[in-house]
Image 1: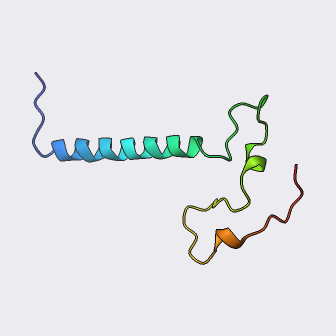
Image 2: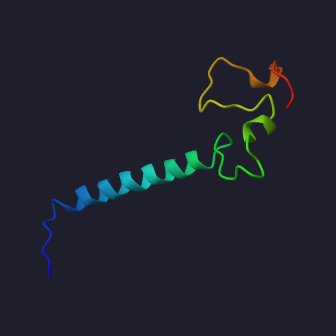
Length: 74
């Protein structure tokens, strides 16, 4: 049987916690609207988003409800 000193248990806990958090964040990024997984059916998914879609994680001074689309409709 392997003996672990009690001082290593918190270290392993926080390392696993950090790795789990990083993994969940990568999964969240991979499911975003700007990522293309199926290029045959939906090659440019970002063109189907609403013009008021909030792309930034935090936008302090931008009111996305009053924005109007300035580009062409594809």
